[in-house]
Image 1: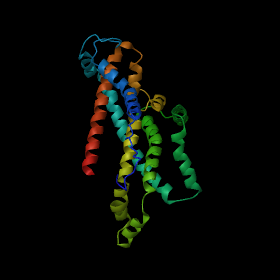
Image 2: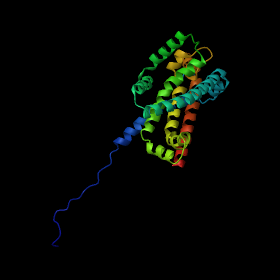
Image 3: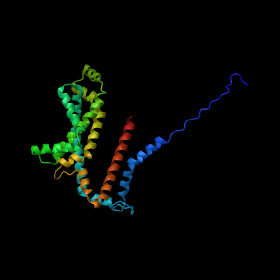
Image 4: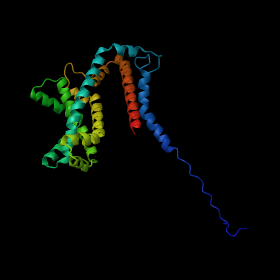
Length: 271
């Protein structure tokens, strides 16, 4: 027997990996995506009500292609979202810059006003905007829709850009000024490139919120200004329009996944 041998040998068994996290993740994914799968399947279902499968068909997409009112609402919604996003991005960025660089009673009031649309329920905000337009004698329509969307989108852009500004190093701006850059050159070549990711993120968030807003648009819309969410809500009242809504939703989901995939690939290539 060796002198340095140990009579007691402890064998450590490898720990078994738990399958509970993977199972929980799978259940969450099924819970989130099962409605989308059912919706896409019903867009190809010959059954009008979608209760049972009655065969594959393209007729709902053919009816959607012929529904001029839906395409008019989609085009109006895209124009509204793009216009409100552009103005809200400019105003929100300037607002975030003022909140970050100045501290006074006026700025505290400014911060409270920026946070108000984030905390206020959409029903109350829609009623408040409608009351304001009625008191001013403004006819509801495209302009009131645009003003309302800019009003609640500005706050989201300002908060996103403000979060980006908190990680901004002011010494970079001072160094640019010391090297002879004018205020405009320093803002264009130093501040704007550093804040661009936050500005784009805020603009994307504003565009998404404006695109699918229903509650506020319901209060401030008028004749000839029916957005796509309002059009879909009115179509939901009749069962014969439900398969067409499924087809439209399938196209919107496909476009969303396409843009998300493109953005992911561009971001990975840039990294």
